[in-house]
Amino acid sequence: MRTSNIGIQHIKDWEQLRLKAYKPLPNDRWTIGYGNTFYEDGTPVRENDVITVEEAEKLLRIILAKFENSVNRYVTSNINQSQFDALVSFAYNVGSHNLKRSTLLRVINYDPNDLKEIERQFMRWVRSKGRIIKGLINRRKSEFELYASN
Image (cartoon, rainbow, N blue to C red; front, side, top):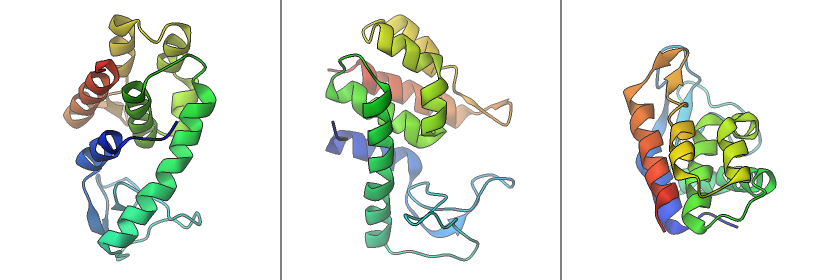
């Protein structure tokens, strides 16, 4: 399965395009494009890096494929396109390694329609460096809404 246009737009809306490297928080990694901390060759983003819109779009598609592959590999239950898109957005934000070890994944693999528990599991991922972040609360709510839509 591959991310739909709706799923791609969902990620773009949350990540917001940045053509010059920046740090979302003072101790974060340098970030560019649609929330990317690395380039396709594995080189980390550095201070003063700049890219074009076209390069950001290309980088998004390349990086997105890695998260799509992870969701396809880790999810063993039958899920629909909206559910897939939501999980790709989640993995794009928290990393494939965190998706793989999450209770969210275990719940979905057991019963992808247990929406009450799945919502609860999405909402466990709202912290950064131990602090609850309003933006992450909003993103998880949005990802769950996408997951629950048909």
